[in-house]
Length: 265
Image (cartoon, rainbow, N blue to C red):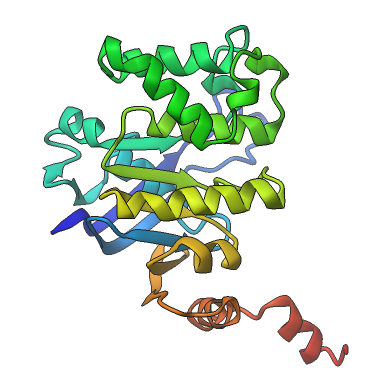
């Protein structure tokens, strides 16, 4: 059974000039963030979204989480429609958000996770052990009682992942989860993500990293200008094979190819 389904989904952002547009430089218009995208992810599988900035990766995650609703088509999560049954969808989805504003700076990591566990209806008796387990899984146990205002960007990243996992969701959404992590922390995270599908969870991960795609993905979808440009099984694909697939589907040249074309060696 497919855990996540996008059926001919489009999302359009409309923008209007500011109220005091004295110079007349701003114009009304629209940006088509997603254009007739159809995708599905089977239960217990991980899908990696690749694509340049502005290709629609984060928009896709927000549509699955119900933070955004489609302008055309529909999104199903565990059989529930994000427009018709958003509350049901949210019960299943954990979305890793890792900005400083996502947490209470004068609370510790443990206190923040306990608060969000309460919001996610984690039973009172289960909360302490659940919080402890998430701190251990994300490598934050030594900083559990540190105020998060003292956290580095990488620690915020790990805390965001812990927050997403605290309610043990069946669908987990990760938006560039290792962008602020050092190599050792990134490798630890990859091991964590590989464990999730084995436990029955479905993962969608947006990234720019071919290494990350090869390490954790079962399937790769390439988005380009809001459209699905390519889709393939990862299997035993090497990083270079994924890189080649990406640039073939987007029609862009990678940096090495550009240098070669210019006669650089």
